[in-house]
Length: 406
Ligand SMILES: Nc1nc2c(ncn2[C@@H]2O[C@H](COP(=O)(O)OP(=O)(O)OP(=O)(O)O)[C@@H](O)[C@H]2O)c(=O)[nH]1
Ligand SMILES: [Mg+2]
Image (cartoon, rainbow, N blue to C red; front, side, top):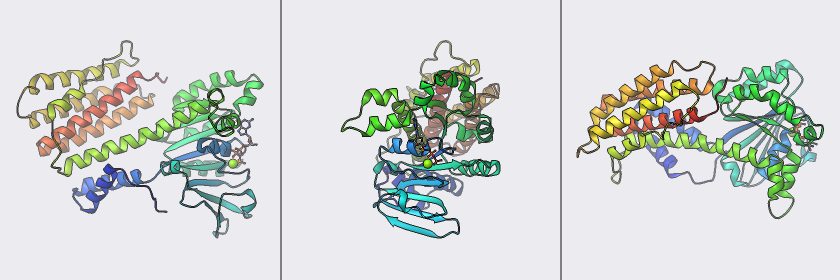
């Protein structure tokens, strides 16, 4: 499948740099992986038991009825295509194509997988893949395992998130849990039965450990709000839960892309010279100054970590900001020293705190990368080291401000 949208300039430059073979081999591999990620739409898996409201949720997120009422197709993928068409893969491996929108009556018998292509620009950013779980435990486990191999974000649809589902989800790697949401579907019915609030409260401890957050949603109402009239019905969009879920998911997609773009930019800064690039070290260092540490932040280790970065930035500013020549080597040394101390400090964070654990791994990676920068001793390397510290600062500030998971 080729994509037709223009690539962002950074992505284009990364691509040409890779084609021009400008990166040393250890960076080339990293760049290739990054490019691969940036060119692909973000993969959103919509998972749940039979009838849990997955198709409706995808239609809601797309603002159109991409998936008609069909049953028993284990996997349905919604992707971008210039002309609407559907592809069906049967259990014997044959593939059948049909042009036009996806119609329930088109679905051949024994379809194990459908791919629907729509000319909808939002699908250039993200794909949706509906994955239905059957009652068979072995099948469930293998489906969930399969999802972890490609999904960037998981939306787990359920009315109750029972013990079976909890057990299945528990085995998913943390880096996926960190980007995933529990979607409590049929919120309208649950509210009418008077069980919604209690259910949300009961799930709270699990959600805070295992997901980014929970969204209750009355999907049918949200679809009505989005599509029934010429204008969005704001009140219903909000009360159905559609607005919150949609903005949470979009935010997550955006975050992922920004992080990848930042890394691509850094790689380019490092190896691709540009006449118009003005290196201004003192200004970059000033950026390292952390936003004021919020009083009453929850984790004392994270607070000390922020303070360490603050001190490091202050030192660098005091020492080098007024000098005419940037002192690349000294700045590098300072950055390496700070990253190492940070990594040491973060070992004291709570091992049950997923966010802090991630942070610790990232800091160790950064410290390692800075050692490589240090070998080069030039201005570019110093800028990159400062950029890394800046990224760490953002992450730590974010973790320090986040509600504590316990
Ligand atoms: N009341 C109510 N009904 C819903 C909601 N979401 C989905 N439904 C209905 O529940 C039924 C199942 O929804 P689907 O979206 O087809 O569920 P699914 O998980 O895709 O089902 P399978 O693909 O067959 O496993 C449909 O009749 C939907 O209209 C909701 O939030 N509230
Ligand atoms: Mg479905």
